Image (cartoon, rainbow, N blue to C red; front, side, top):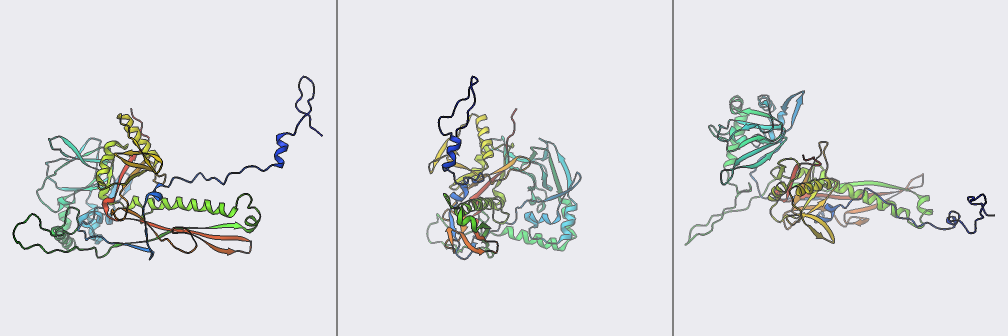
Length: 470
């Protein structure tokens, strides 16, 4: 029996052939495999050279370094009053390793809070250097004289940075630069006279300062490592210097981290519903993809080994004005000047850089990387990663790194050849079937990352995204 179709001109038309709606009941639809929006390009996992860590722990041996402390200081606030956490004063090179909390508290209480407006001078070149300054909030430019007497920005400092502990060790010295506020700044200042007053009452601090001065007198090369005595350009038969290469006595060790989950599949699904696609394979595929996403996230953000937290503080620079400009990217290149491999940034940060280039009439070229056209700056490719966070203030970071063990760069750490491996350092282990007929698989991946020498990784911080230009 055929169904009537929509009447026209007062007459009912009879259906002359099988309708498509009915025909679909006897056909099989063409299906896609399950899709997952969370899958990204994961460039970092593809670009990092991976070092085999057979023992599960990687020991990073370096030359002995005399560089002591250069950390960032943390503060707390009560209303508008800002104070430095006493124990955080150990981040200053002068006080690194000094653990007398009573003395640290006495020093912390003597810091004076001052507010500066944009453009206001904090310390001026040529004036007596008689204080140490901690930047609690805001951005500060250190300005010095260029080759031809014009002003040039030597360095940009921001939240947690400080200058200059050296003035506490000398008397009647003078500022070699001018510090000027770029934004509204809150600065905590400790006068040299206040430091000396605490020093006079603390024998433990006196001994610590003397030991610090003694360390400064030890020979070190331009990188802060123990010097290797050499002789060159000599004539005749002079006595050649004797030397040896000293190593760190307590090298850092990286233990492989793990990302895991338990995949659960009902046996009825695994047995009956595998046509046209194997349900277990698809469940496993998506689970592996999710773990890989988490793996890249940890390599960037983990507080123990993540790249954002393991860059040397001397390798961290700030944008001069907010958005990432060609000048900022050139300065970042200067921190990783030995064979840089690639930039890594959030897509929005790369877009912000592109906008700054367009505003200046500069159009960076793209280069071919394995069949993919990617943007580049100075011939160095710029890869995207959505794992680099964007803060609530719409700021992010741009990383530049040199990779490879032979290049003394950044390397990934893993252990290939583990039981039930499906990919290097990635395995799936059958855990059994429970009383509810649910099959369980343990899916694991083991990994870490190491920066072999400090200048292998540089970070441009405080990168503003989406600033509207007038």
